[in-house]
Image 1 (cartoon, rainbow, N blue to C red):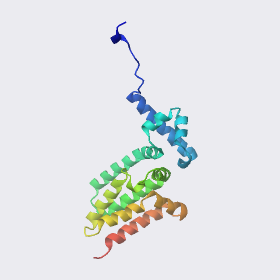
Image 2 (image 1 turned 180 degrees about the vertical axis):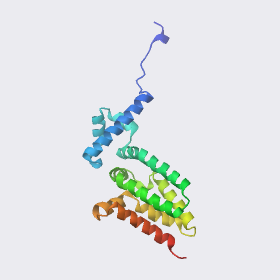
Image 3 (image 1 turned 90 degrees about the vertical axis):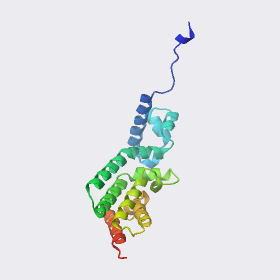
Image 4 (image 1 turned 120 degrees about the vertical axis):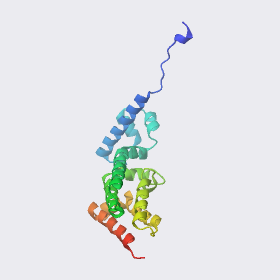
Length: 198
């Protein structure tokens, strides 16, 4: 038989297989997180429950932080799109900033377990994660329009840090604040910084 007629199966997974495996791993992780809590679930448990090898798991996600941020991805994209629409339709930087702080606080409260787990798994943490740096950029841009002579970098940092998952978890779980009170505090802080007389 001629060599060119030999058909050797390619052991590498196809792109479709890779996509299917990634979706399976995310679905499995999401279910386990809801059933057992994000902190208690291990990478090996996810692979075992999904019935895939650990090598397959680690080809898609290097650690649990990667899984957490992947699960957050769609909601993060939705928030970004909503923000772009809001900024294009409303001209008031004050109202836009109030709106954005409220939406971001709700996002953190809604996903605090995933965000906190991701924060613990990285050296830079939530506030330095590339998926969230646009929050600071949005806050800074609106502050600059609202009060150009303000130290906008410092003011943006103050508001951005107040949205950190660890700050909001502390306020909710230790201090017992509800999300309405947290948002009111964000708004008050913003107003005091921007309404201060020169």
